[in-house]
Image (tube, rainbow, N blue to C red; front, side, top):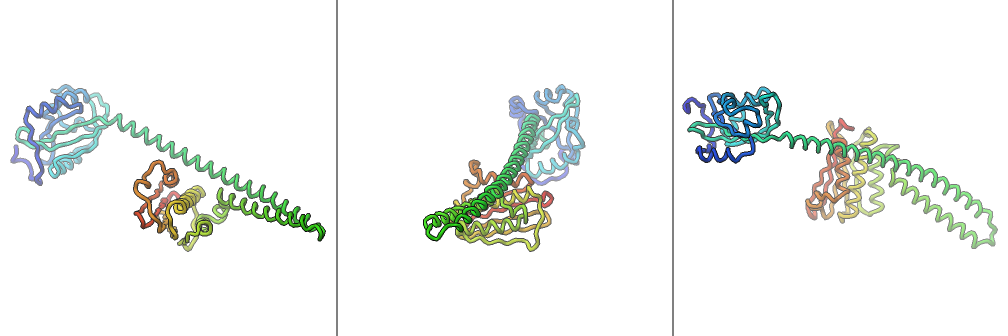
Length: 363
């Protein structure tokens, strides 16, 4: 009876007439049922069920009306029901997930929408149960496929870095040594020229100049493919070197704030962070119209954090979230492989901040 119920905070209680209630039940494709709320925030047996509920759970209507909701819910759900009833008296409705049990013991993953109503002048719960088993299977497949694609992307990145390293080494060692040999031979020829062979001497000098330029180009291309400093000295010196190179090539001031002590990271993580850093600097050079970049690398107990701030014109949210922006997508993907993230914050005419974070347990 109503006087037996404990007091609850006021909440909107829906009054449903039999006619409206029947129409609602008749039109539903989801399982629906009604239970009274008893003293102590417990539920009565079902007092109404629709045909979909009977069909889904394998009971006749008469059988369902003789059991409580706990009969068709897997696990110990009594305490959860009390919490749900408390929230219903506060808000009037809520959505939650549960695993239903059919009469023959099968399980059905369901999403329940519960509403506080008044039925036969007593507070009751109208619950609408939607089978989400198929949806969750699709979501799980999508999750697995996404993980597979991410693993593939990680593998492709690793293979590409290995190829870059091999090509860089070949260019530096093979072409570099060949140019050195050519320069030595040209110098020897020049030294043997007579004083009256001035025109030929000028040609030799021109050849030596070209060789020096080629050597510089080889060094530059090799460093772009895979900077040796990253492998030999680590991430911190590589970032400092890249800042200096960036400043020389673009004329944009680039300052670095690094930890006092060196940090030891896995090779793949060092590569990922360095490539993200390079892409961020590339974006500054191409789009920001900035004249200053501040780079800060911090190592905390739980994470490695890299901040790249510029004072340029900024970037819009549309540009940040643009799925066609392969550079930004590549930055995020590199970080996500190691459980990290790349967050980009910006407002027009106030610059852009790129925040890269990698969990330390992945490093």
